[in-house]
Image 1: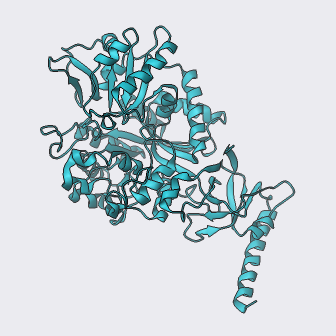
Image 2 (image 1 turned 90 degrees about the vertical axis):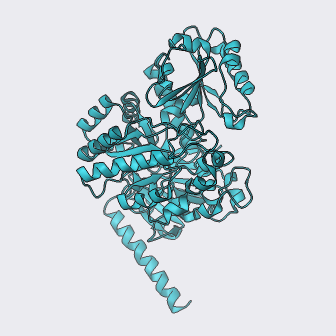
Length: 559
């Protein structure tokens, strides 16, 4: 053994003894994980083979021998047999109640024609009780042979006596049948609301499709679910998240009723997630929560309520995203601003004065500019250095607006899986020049910002490895196109892992509590059956989550 080897061995022993002495003065670990291939996402110790947990937090990271030396008589030792361990993944933009609802409604994602949508609806119709509405989500006309919006006639003919509401995949448009429109009081005389559009037939009658704010004309007539139903559905949605390796999410806009359901579940130890919940943009809820004040780490670190979600525009797929120039495939249409610039500025100012982060949905280049302008104006009135305001999606950006994120301290919260879902048609929407500023992760990262990554589920699938794969390959699940779509915008694997761990933590003011396997942080981690940092890109989506742990407690185990 060389002198250098001796020195290293002595250092390892000293570190272990120091850790053991610290623990012996208190108590021994509850859990020790050994024989692991660990990516800690901690720059001071990027890899390790073991760690120890006490009281739900990491108390040691290092070698398996060092960790075993800390064990007490009641310590549980888990040998993962060389499998890969990463910090628990966090979806930085998702909709938990939306997932809960989607799991119980008709699943329309992946339907390849309007006829298939109708078949799925008809198959569910016999289960609908009198007075109930049949609801579904996930249709996308861009996947159909005819890529125009559908009209209600075929759906109405198939379901003449049941009100049906089918939400588009992006949540920014819906299709209603005749029975639903009748119950909602919709006629040819119904006017488009501000920030919304009723798609009409040539004779002026509603076609059945309602875009952005126009959806409210239908939704106001839909009977609301009971609190008990929503609680049960939320528990199912949480289990679905855990199954895919998620230990947390940033819930991008919930009403007070939903937040109170989450808090009730957490209070009763039924909320196996760490949820950073954004308050939906409605005046009573904003007033209530800003008066209550920002709350962090409630119920043993399961609920944070210290952010507000606002909306600048619609979505690209339904041509509601606000653009600076008309859509390349729809001349004359520049999309929709669903909120006034003045409103966005006013809420941003409210957030700054009350200690609430403000996160604005913006997809089109005009929507993003309006959001950045509102933030800039509010910050001039109420200067604050560490506001961490966010733009949710930041999907299509004008080149002159890209440096403004870093300059203003605004975080672009993006969803890598949107790129691979949209890439077959996105360029047709905005043309070959504007597409260079779309899904532009590398261009943004090069300015010095971070990009917390998400899925926007139920818009996309829950599996966070889809976004990891998209980020590093710019390819879909079939590994198309060869070489990736605009591959100059890829992330490195290290960046992609950070985008699902420490960057979401920073974007939620949680970086001292979670995001890496570091001493003192929550012991949230995932065991994978392969090394996503080294396997070929084409193998990433074959990875299985073997187990998911929150605070040292296993919340999911693969069968």
